[in-house]
Length: 109
Length: 114
Image (cartoon, rainbow over all chains, first blue to last red; front, side, top):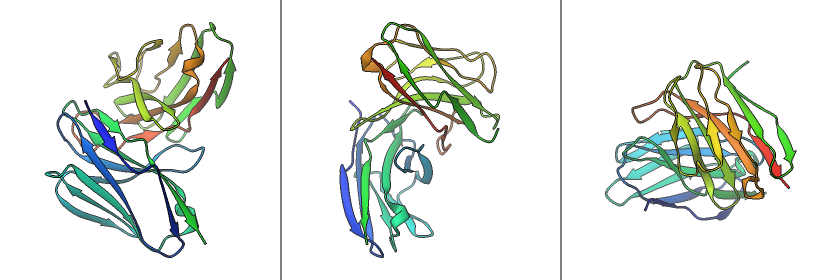
């Protein structure tokens, strides 16, 4: 079967750095997405990785290791507005997105 | 219209009733999707359409049907609602086919079936 694992919840302090991990087992791999979802709102796109390595975009970075079936999302200089759920999703061999359950990130002052 | 709109925003429905959730996009995307999101389970694909006139089944299609008469609209119908269909429903769109095509989501419809 296809499976994506993320921690259910994480807590971090404003101004700090947090790393949210995602491991996956899917039938084929055609890229990995990270989305942000604030409570009661729709998911919005954060990043996309298809090759191994680190992609940096402002305060957010995403890393991929295809051989390990592993990705992480790194958030720097945390702000209160970063409190949200972070969804990891993998595009499988049929180009369908398989979604993880999401990680709820709580930022404390 | 900017992006994707969904209607209604929320709905309480008696079991056994028929309900259509509406979705319209103005980005001229060929691919559209319907997901349901339940606590602890993440987004699950119900049905999708890669282009107008075609539809396909996702992970959890039972009890739902869709149609794609044109590029912009992708309604989702519950023929006879059951309490297990209580969920938040998201419509999304993207360009189909190759990887790297991010999906854009509507604001969601919160449906409660009693």
